Image (cartoon, rainbow, N blue to C red; front, top):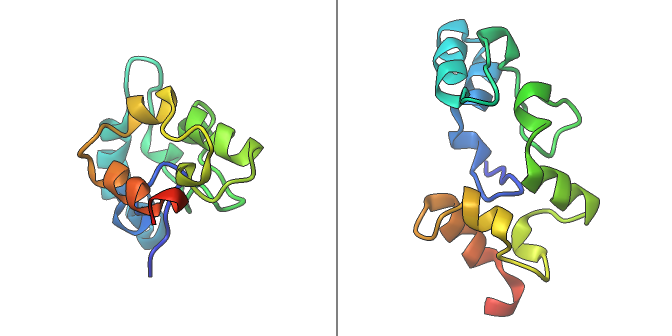
Length: 112
């Protein structure tokens, strides 16, 4: 089953989703450390993600996500549907050659 985030990440490969679905606190701790940065510090209790298309949101991780906010505002399934693709937000988070950028590039309607 494929579940693609707005930014092109395959949610089924994401350790945050896996930790949530498996209720795995050891993996939650690892994911919290991996996703923490200078602006956002996460704890294992913060790792409860069902994907950015779900109604349930990991607030500390999703709230600062400019890609999710933009795609939701424009009512898009992924950034690849946007007339402004790729925008600076996508270029910053999804560098050319990354797995999720390649996925998005392959989904752009005008490229088919």
